[in-house]
Image 1 (cartoon, rainbow, N blue to C red):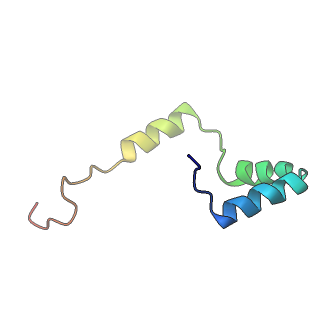
Image 2 (image 1 turned 90 degrees about the horizontal axis):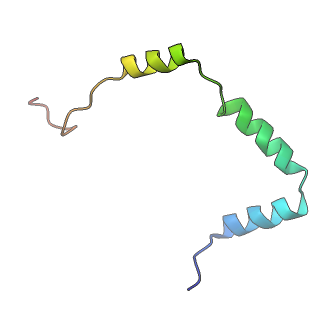
Image 3 (image 1 turned 90 degrees about the vertical axis):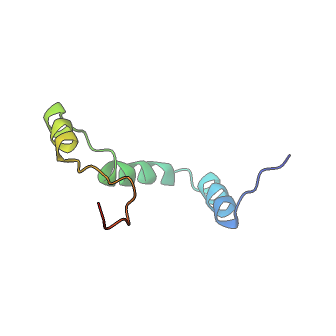
Length: 62
């Protein structure tokens, strides 16, 4: 059974095969925006800052 693959996915896969040097640039961009090291203190601050979510978000009576 063939899996669906969008035109964009096909284009990007083929383009990356033709331009392997862009893999390094892709990794640099990911590191810049997403792969940030976090200290244990920072992780603890994030956990403590969480706000509990209501069981039903749109219920104005609770």
